[in-house]
Length: 357
Image (cartoon, rainbow, N blue to C red; front, side, top):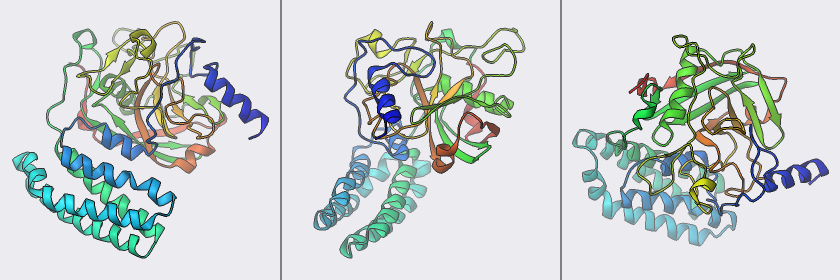
């Protein structure tokens, strides 16, 4: 590691470098969740409870360690157990789906069965690339079934935020930049107000033509500062800046915490449902004077394993994560302070955006 990267690593660990705002010197380092795949994080973040399907998902995801060690016999055994689990729990999984979705669920489970056969075949001939492709397809099918399990929106958003837009579900956003296009999934299940503010501004064309105003190698890439003296979005009706509260969901909680950091709450070892644990995590910026003054500026967390190992950063619990880049990582890594957003648009899930309560 060169001197620049070593110094940046030291700054990150000490909490002396962060998106808009300084971290206290005694901030705790959370132990962290080592999951770094954005699609896996998004699957785990769904508000569902289906143990058999989730066990199948986690078994397949856990094969990464065995694959890295080239333990092909262990991989074969894990995949065979996964096939047995699907066969034995298929009816239980189907019955847990809403009646109107069971036909679609059955077709997806048939597809999954075929995909698991392809995963097993790849392990038998020690074909790493085929294994990865087949596992990715199988996990995608599991994710589609899990999405069918999501019922009504899982909690009531506090009345004090009734005037703010909210995303009651998920949306996919295409962000065209001067270096190419990235695709991000925005998660309103766990950050409905933050995700809602972002999607609302995307729909308004607010981000079109805005430059990146902060770019720190291996750390953050920030935009959303409008032209002129304003630092956020001005509501055309009130002529005042619309602000968004800090919003963080913790596993096991019924709803997010608002305007309180993990340090404030005494949650020094907690992990958010949406962690800053992968390249392209979307984060909402706020100042170092207040937690609830974020308005329009957001950042891409430029995860670098050597500098910010999963769970060992000081951004979790202090900033709202609200989604993940799922495609266009090569573009993201090329972007810098001389670049900007050409156009952003919602390509899926726009109907989940509600303008207010």
